[in-house]
Length: 260
Image (cartoon, rainbow, N blue to C red; front, side, top):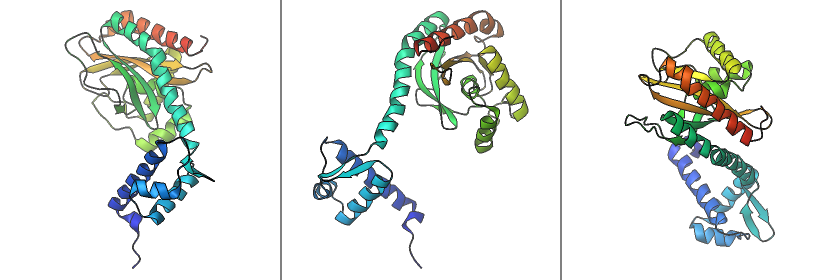
């Protein structure tokens, strides 16, 4: 029976570790590094190093020159994506601080990360009772106000495909798990430019969010205000939170080049 190394999880992890070690070696120098030097620095067998470099070259992460190997141009495109996220965070940060000062509640900045929302910035509430979620937290899209705002930038077909992949699990008794009702909620976000999470993602926590748009009008991020339900009341949402939130989202969008 032929042994398939890729059927062994440990083998896969070992291969990844080795590939990343080669990438980090190449990242230490601007000039190309020859195969002999890479082999010596990695401590791996030369055939293994050559095979992995060849695979990385096929994927665009490594390129071979007459003088040796260098990092490939794939890192430029990936770096651009990361840079875009960092740029949004940099531009939005002072606006997040002002919103936090005005509302005293927890402020999140999030983006669409494949089939989840991803927090890329957070400013804690000025109250003693705060939320535990932190930067780097990923949430379902259907159960959060921030996620609804991010999805509102997609068309219904794209939303349907995404929901079919990840499902609509009931995280609380208030989570919307009917797709048609969910689309109604998304259409409401499109009309009103804000979304509400009425304890749909976490018991006792309510949130309100608004989309952030780039110069082309695409929704590239969303901003949310979150807090315990006893503070995030309907009256607070209508009279205080939404006006501040929507204005802040518009200010950030304007800073990104969007003309409202």
